[in-house]
Image (cartoon, rainbow, N blue to C red; front, side, top):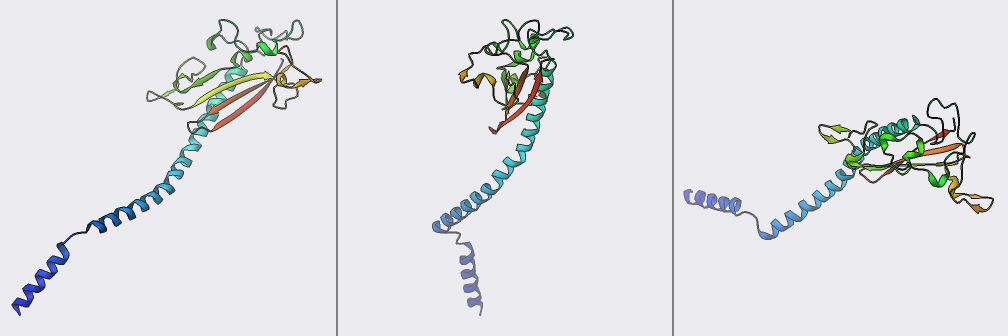
Length: 205
């Protein structure tokens, strides 16, 4: 009886201490890899979706800040900057469409009319507030990975199309167009590559 007990103990010990074979290990690794790929495939897009609303909120805040700053300026370089008593296109013409953009020697600190912002393009840490300061959170730019682009053009019928691109009686404009309505378009590109467009109109007053 004692011999049978020892034989059973040895057989039991061998059965539970022999470990895994190479084939069993390979199969286990393959199964584990498949499971991990499925999990990552499910969780990955969800984590991306969870950050996109935050990017969109930051993009909206940035665009609103820029629109507020731009709309605080005069309609045109030829407008009266000290009270607006005189409008351009009355005493003298507004700036021609082909000349919209910052005037010679002007920087953002000295922009005095809305079309000075035409062509403004800032990325990441170079995105500044109205005081020319970086917007930081714990020393890191709030807009790392973002791009902000500004476009200002005449749009008399407010259809969203640059009047300079439209045919006037079948004749393309040559950059000499002047009008009394400008469209300010701000495009903010999020770190995920999604372009978000914000726009407002400014009339000649």
